Length: 171
Image 1 (cartoon, rainbow, N blue to C red):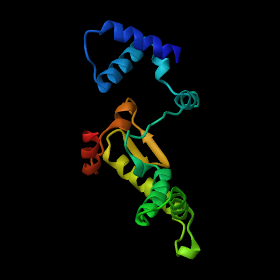
Image 2 (cartoon, one colour):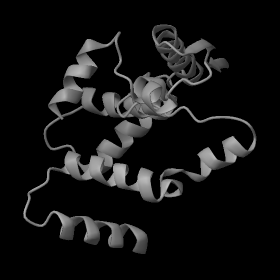
Image 3 (tube, rainbow, N blue to C red):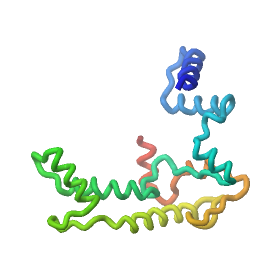
């Protein structure tokens, strides 16, 4: 934390006369870290994988369909939304979310197909892999071309999902 505070102090002193957007500050911070303290940008997971001869390929910033836990969470939220009624208490909301997650025989609600959510996430990832240069195989047997820019691949736009990309531009 001390490192980050010192960095922000030095950066803000250097550009005190300018107003920066959040994106500009983020980009400038990353550039500075890459040049002066690249180890600060590496996660413990990335370091551990590299020590074992692997490489981390991070998910794009907004890709809930690649992550089965997001699909599971959505099943609870969607069920709760479908059962909205005026005057609903927070206890009722919690009950509806739980019913969406675990099912409720008295409400004739089956639990979600978690294995199907995993298969769906794998399908989404494999579809993306097929669209990106530098990646080959599937999520269970992924090959990355030598010299491929991993950061670029993981942050690349999603060519098959125009709606999500439009939403990203608006955020």
